[in-house]
Image (cartoon, rainbow, N blue to C red):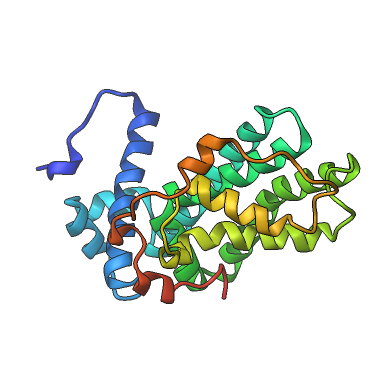
Length: 242
């Protein structure tokens, strides 16, 4: 007898597999966030998601494989969203800003999974952790390539590209880790605008035009629900592999 979340839908085998994996991952993220990775079992995940234990094992051979899939999906979202945003822009500075904005929006959309990666990636095997680190470095190249283009076109002064890339990446991840403490609260767009204005103050080769007035008007927004990004979750978070 199937449980509630095991009813079938005629969306094709590949769509059904992906849908099922996402359902299991969502249940795992919720449980890991509340109870912790080590204190949770496959049986607990199955119960939380209203699956059978056998169904979970059909898609993930172990709890570690499930954690690896959760973190990998965030990195895959970077690989999909950042190049698309860059391709839609034409000028070097616009491409850089588009890359940072897309990066931050992915972190915002997948904030629970991102926090999971910061806290629990140390629980992965050495091989899987190295794969995560390698994929993270590859996604960072989207940012460093945009910085290099800005330097080559004299939009930026000559800078240490690796260091500036590192600062941008830390800034973006700060949205999931610590943006809850900003007062007054900001939207993702306002966070990027305000942060880049500070980061690029000594980097821009010449003063650029002021940001659109509409963005200035929309800078301050209502706070997000505390459950999305709590102080406790942020205190427990750490970068991948730390």
